Structure formats: C-alpha cells, structure tokens
Amino acid sequence: MSKEKVVLAYSGGLDTSVILTWLKENYNVEVIAVCGDCGQGDDFDAINKKAYATGASKSYVLDIREEFLTDFVWPTMKAGAVYENDYLLGTSMARPLIAKKLVEIAEKENAGSIAHGCTGKGNDQVRFETTIHALRPDIKIIAPWRIWDFKSREDLLDYAEKHSIPVEQSRAKIYSRDQNLWHISHEGGNLEDPWNEHLEDIHVMSVPSEKAPDKPVYVEIDFESGVPAGIDGKKLDPVSLLSTLNKLGGENGVGTIDIVENRLVGMKSRGVYETPGGTILYKALSALEKLVFDRDTLNYKNTVSLKFAQLVYDGLWYTPLREALSAFADSIQAPVTGTVKMKLYKGSALPVASKSVNSLYSEDFATFGDDDVYNQKDAEGFINLFSLPLKIRALKKQEADEA
Image 1: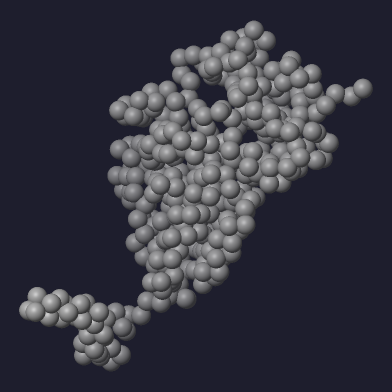
Image 2: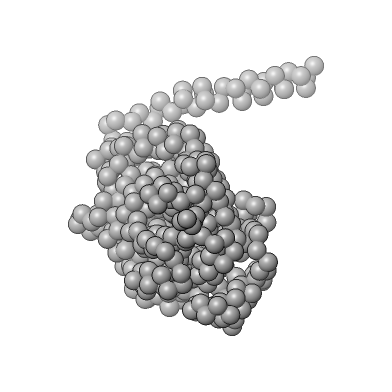
C-alpha cells in the first residue's frame, strides 16, 4: 500500500530541513519538497540534492522569478501599495505565488496535504493558508510550528544534530531572513530589542548609505502603462531590469528601512528591509504619475493604495476586492507611459526629471513669464465661487452676533 503524500514548502534552511524529517518520522508519509526560485540567489542544485539526502521522495525547484514580477510585483506597484508608509511588501507578494505553486504540485502528485514552516506568531502562515483555501479548499494543511513540541530554533538545531541533518545556521547568529528578487528582510537577533541600532554587517543587497560613493549616479527608467520596460533607453525583460536596478541601488545604499510594524496576528515586530531596485521603481513611477494623473485620480489612487497594501500584507491576494482594485489600477495606469530620470546618492533615490507623451503639464499655462493662454483676471471669479460657502457662513455668524 502506497504512503500518503505531503507537499512541503521547502527552502533547505533549518526549519524546513527539520520539518521534512519530522513529517516522515511522525506521519509516515512521502514528502515532496517544492522550492520556488523567487530570486533569492540560493544554490538550487544544492537545495535539490539536500532535499533528497534528507529523505524527500521527490524534489521540485521552480523558476518563478518572472511570474513573481509580472503577476504580483508589478500589479502591487501599479496600485502604489506600501504597508504602513514604509514596507514595500516583498515577502507578502511572494507568499501567494509560492502557495499557488504548492497547490499545483499537490494536484500533479495527487497529494492530500501541504505543509509549511511558518511559525504560529507570523504573518506568513496566514498568507500561505488563505491562498491554499482559496485555490483548493479540500486539501489538508500541516503547520508543524503550531503542533510540535519544539519551542525555539535552538531546539531545531538539537534535533538536526540528533538526526544528522546538515544546516548552516548556528547558535551564535540566528537571524530570520527572507530574500527574493524584490527584497531581503531581516528579523531576530539583536533586532528584537528596538533600542538596538541594526549592525552594518546585516546588509546583504546593499551597502550602508555612509559607505556609498560620494558621486551621484543617474539612471533613466522607461515605463509603459505603469510597467517598467527599460533602462537608459534599452528594453529589458523584468528579471534583468530589476536585477540591474538592485545592483545600482545597492551600490548607492538605496532602499534600506528599519521599522516596527503591526503584524496581522496582533503583535508588533521589528525588521530591517533592503529593497534597492524596488525603491527606485516606486519613486520613479510616482513621479511619472504626477505628470500624467489629474488631481482627483491621484488622490483616489492614494486611497486605493492603502487598502491594496493591507490586502497584500494580510494574504488576501485571491479575493474579489484585490482583483477589482487591480482592475482600477490597470485602468488608470494605461496612459502612464514615459521616462523618469533618477538621481541615486548615498541612500537617496530622487526623481529629477520626467517626460511623457500623455503629460498633463503645460508650460504655456504654468509659466511665470508672459503667456497668451491664461487670463489671470479669471481667478477672481473662481475664488469668489470657490469661497462662497465660507462667505455665507461668515455672514450668517455675523448676523447672529449682531442680533
């Protein structure tokens, strides 16, 4: 009789390496390891071999970098979503895609369960499981961190040693990191005390701003309907484009934030996020929007951005509301085609010039010099009508005071 199959979200790190062995030991199942390459830069051949060496019956390594950018990152950026005014949602966007791939492999392999290594304190458990429920409501979910006896990653290290599971983490330096093509996050270690300044050696994708070059770097970014399309006049595929900007931004110390955020599960957490290329793109697109959008569209988009960010952060990607908000973003981004020149200097990414065939800016109207298109006398009538409610209110108050 064949064993039941469990699909495991596998990274080859401490948690999922232990989970693979633990599932076999406690459930007597076949474990199918699935690793999604979102651009984290790991040695995927080594991860594949490690999965088999640790006991997986099958191992999948899926290149999902371009799908990550085109189907998740670009729509989120087009909506202008930023969680709590700081976080560019790097991990939040990747989780629903990885969960989608887990479901696809589970269907392919006829597996009845999906397992993940998310803790019971974090947001990722929600993001994985809401996606799985949305796509395959009948599949069973196993979340070892919520049911096993281990209390800490030190316990996992003990288990790994006992079962001869090779791991890279040590007791001296235990950071929780998540990296993909968009960003890298750092949590744990000395970051758990918010009074501790994060250490310089924490940086992976970028240099500290103090160590960036003393000379600014300029880069021109082309957009087509709100989607990044090229750099310095050269068309690039999504992965090459973001990789190029990550290098430029990282070298100039762009995109590192140190924040305390409100987790979905109710507690606050402190993390350091490096998002060099993404920070450049967000600022560039925002500059182009200001050139193209009218005031009401821009203001309403800001309202949509807040809700979109919350949906993504909370793992609600596969929902009717998120899809509707994406449709709105696609609609308003249609004319957002043009080029933005960015200045990168010691941690800052500043838009310094922009152009678009759909620009609503008119030098004829905006000039402080002589013009033949704007009659300044017209402003008097406009102001009288615009302020009429205030004038009436003041007159009524004056009448009441005199009575």
